[in-house]
Length: 53
Image (tube, rainbow, N blue to C red; front, side, top):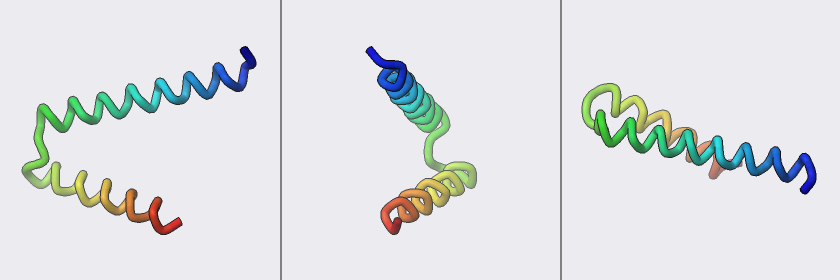
């Protein structure tokens, strides 16, 4: 196993972990309220930016 593969696997696991944390966070606090609205706008603008480039 090369160091690059190990690093990629570590990055992937960190990404998965952060995704799980976000899911748990939104499940606890919900999408409602001004906080949820701002997160939705931020998330949708980020997704649209990724789709455009």
